[in-house]
Length: 139
Image 1 (cartoon, rainbow, N blue to C red):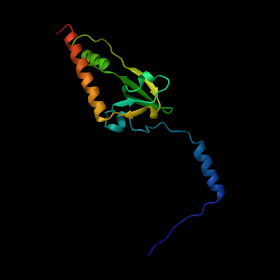
Image 2: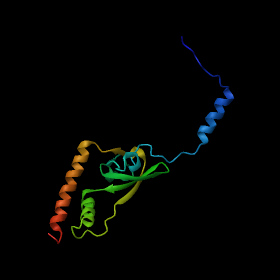
Image 3: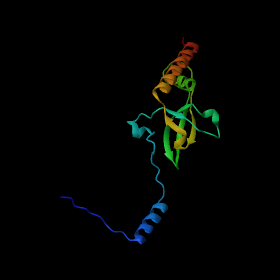
Image 4: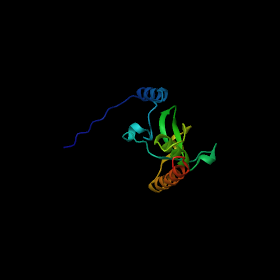
């Protein structure tokens, strides 16, 4: 036996529901799940793309730290800065207070870095860390 259930909604109800949907404020949620909370506390490595205003940023990497007003706040990462931060925090001597550059980017300007991109970034980080370690006065 099949039992069909349906409801009849008046045209006026449909128009009202459409107007309510259009006037609801957009919620600041993490639409692409790039924030640490959506990934067990570990934000994914993101690759920047399709940035027309500053095309030199395309292909660089970062990590999302927050989301609001349809934009992610992304900490821009490069191997040299990351190596300097590791040296400063790891007792390797020197480095000072290293702060990343923060950018506000649309979700379409970000994508999760693939395995090859992650390996390339990791290799650059290892090389930059080795150079920083060799150049440190404690060596």
